[in-house]
Image (cartoon, rainbow, N blue to C red; front, side):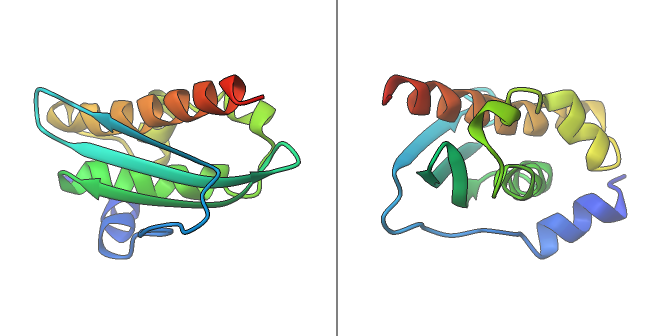
Length: 121
């Protein structure tokens, strides 16, 4: 049902936990399934220096959040706009239709974060 990549991110989530000193933090929710994703970053010189997530959700939601943090850490903010739910789902080895919301939640979190970072400039 789930790919090995997805299961690895679920069983060994990257960048999970709180981030003391975060310069930006957002929370997004999926009201249909109840998943909640909190994303915290330290941004310096227009680059995501450090990122952490906390997620209360399904296997796929935790895996998508983990992958998202790997994709954005160390990158310039302007280079993150291309990350989408589709690219996250593909890099997780595909998602069953019932789990597609997980990649969308991660993508929504990134969009909210980018909006917050943009507004703070």
